[in-house]
Image (cartoon, rainbow, N blue to C red; front, side, top):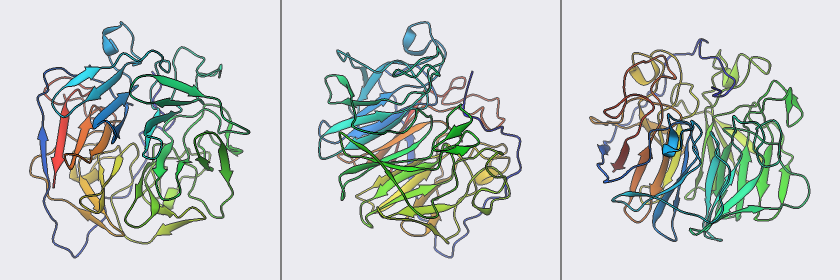
Length: 369
């Protein structure tokens, strides 16, 4: 089974992020929907603001979607009470580690990338998916883009810049010897997609090539914020000055350039999830995989909930999901809450269960301020 390129046996600096502010509280709660997707990780989820539903796609599990295969290809929707499997007339092939974002102007979910174990995805014989698919609530449709486009990749950072009306893509991983012209399997280019055309943006001093970074658009401050990720040893063993291939830097992109934020933050990690909570005016980060001690855990799974508004602060959450990575998370604007689904607790060396069952995780969690 393939899950990224990074070995998990590298040294990571201790958890940072101490601040002088009093930590606020946040309340996580595991929900009990009457139906639910089968447990999975390496899954993606986004909130459809127009229809008021979470949309979940892809992933990797055991007999995923009850079709006798490990790769997940079902599209699921959560209406706040229960999960229902959608029946779109067309759909992307089953894949893990796709990237999803919501285009609030065109009112559709956009999917890019992922990996198909069967070899061959979106016309790419390597299994690394490079197609754009859009979902309007009735069907998925492939988009034939104009001009050059990113090569197929997994675990790319992907989010919608509502002020400039463009999807922004950064990084990701590809199994070839180069990605975006850089050797070492991880990618470092910035791409933008406007609904029909990809444009590669030439920026000075971008973040180091990485995959599994968390990225979200900060609508209050009108910029993309990227945190973490992991790079390959062929690129650097000191990502964001962490002393390891795990990255712990915070970067911001304003549409013209990237800049690294000097503020101390969470410990280095990858496959954390990052969402913007408009009613809170903050970005919220949860989970990820690092090494032993991440967020105080006994293994390499990170279980802290962090907020960012230009500086980092860890929330006090007496109840929280089990530390995990490769999960999905999105913000429900109608109910003003975060929804989290899936993930795995084994990526950081923990062999225990998750959400009342074995890993991968199959629980649905919400967090309210």
